[in-house]
Length: 115
Image 1 (cartoon, rainbow, N blue to C red):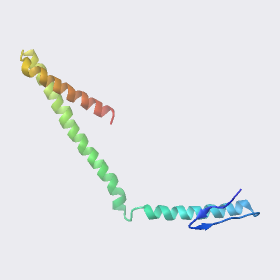
Image 2 (image 1 turned 180 degrees about the vertical axis):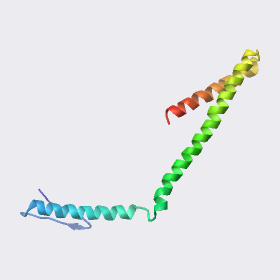
Image 3 (image 1 turned 120 degrees about the vertical axis):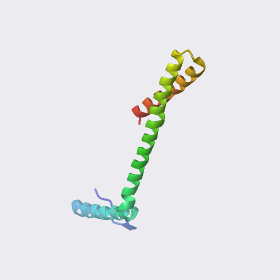
Image 4 (image 1 turned 90 degrees about the vertical axis):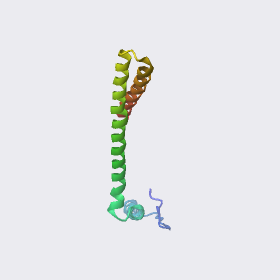
């Protein structure tokens, strides 16, 4: 059952012995090696560990605020302004402004749906 587990340049080979006893010893060695590896790649202080998560969260908040302002508010204002200009028979400004507003509103809806 147990052929040996290689840990820290040591190779344990156990033949013709109690398999359960040697399996638990091998698993303990494997656990120690894994803990050493995890400790070696873990950041030294908690600020580095939690600072990365906080930075990603704060940048996502900024992106969402910019998206709401630019796409949501500006898009809806330009869409309604274009529609009003079309009803007043000012087609030169009404059609481009309403199409730009429609694109902004559609992109805002898609961004909120698939984020």
